[in-house]
Length: 162
Image (cartoon, rainbow, N blue to C red; front, side):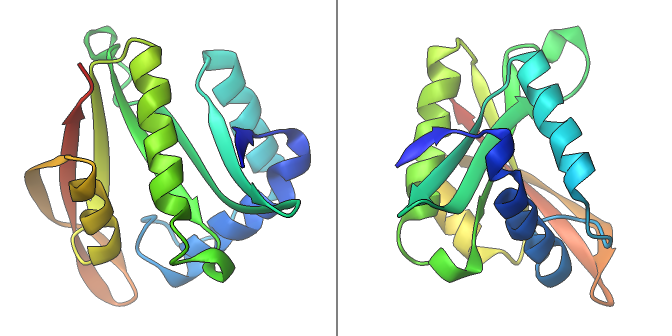
């Protein structure tokens, strides 16, 4: 079941996010975050009117998704950038697909024109998922990240919502 995230979901969201930080190139950062930072993050999302959704299975948070501003300039007001994270214990169950579908529908209903995805160029699973939803490849920023002792390329994909 997909629903809006609450403060009670934050410990599991934190676990999923920190796993991605420590074990993947989905996030170009090195240091784990903490519960206080996640609380502030959720409050800021709510204050700005951006949703955070969780996918719940048997009372457990299996993944989460959100979107927010692409860039903090007024002319980008109709463009959002999104994130989808799935717990390593719930991968390959279609949860990422359901969450992505949900945030696309949400952004469309809120009147946004474009959704952007920044994806590590080696994250074949995420690239495949986004192509499945008709996101179009728009370019690569070469060597913009450095993690796990290697340079990382960031691919951009775009979906026109209307």
